[in-house]
Image (cartoon, rainbow, N blue to C red; front, side, top):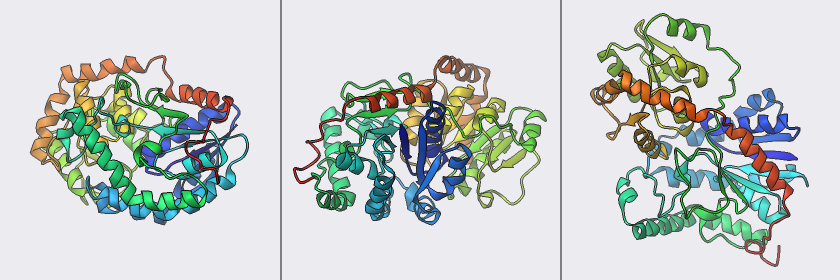
Length: 424
């Protein structure tokens, strides 16, 4: 089998695919990672072939744009950015697809459904967070529209209809124009059609988000894919020394792709200083931090969360699903400062599980952060967070996902007449 892993995003979006690729490669399959070009060294390090889906410049044009992190502006920005690459990415994926290939792709990359519809190549969608599987019976919290999670089901259905119309306006016309050129029927509901009709791998456990009765029947929950690309690596010496030189620090991170978090770091740092708590600031962008840090604060460019969080008293973070899962696995309380996307929904779920809390006012002040952090440092909060560690025992999400993908390739080709026109 030739597994073609296709995705865009930052480390938290890429690492699950790399983790899945390592499992598939260990089972004897060929693996190609198709992602932003700056992940090529990561792919090569794990023995994958690599093809650049977008350049580093193209990647940064989206993820470094301040509007990308705005709950209402990100849709239009992302659509304008993404439609430019539809044809090019289709040709790329088609060119590396072989008779034994299977496409394993993020919903936001339209090359996978196009190749599936045109060539019949098996296709699995990867869904990293329940936020991407909305339904009237399982309503996530939407940034800027929190009332929708408590609205009657018919209101949510109207919202979903409006979102599909909006998606059709933003990128559906360009996508359907190209589908027509390929002899394929147009999509009518873009946020349903972008998921595979064969297999949807939901990489989270049922205790985090139970399967909703009206989710697509092809959804399979596997658990959290705990993988950070460097699990065999030790902590950097300075980080190890810092962790062992005093009380457990609070780790603070707002995501590898976020370059507009200077105010967030300052507020979190001030909160820790108010509480006389040591802190580790994790960011690849040193310019987001004060020029001079006190001795009880350490800046770290990168450290494997699976090892670092074991040394921490709490983690303040943005609520990305990867960081959230790593906190669960380490049994460390977490305080989520949501920015956009699925982050507030993840925060609500964390609070419901008793594993931490989330900030309702964002951006939060140092006083608000300190007030929310203080109860998470108590022995009671530490015990509740540690109690979740047992839920990771005897589970391996990546192995489960790999088995489901192998089963997909063993089935007969699907009937694609619903998505292909006679001309195809």
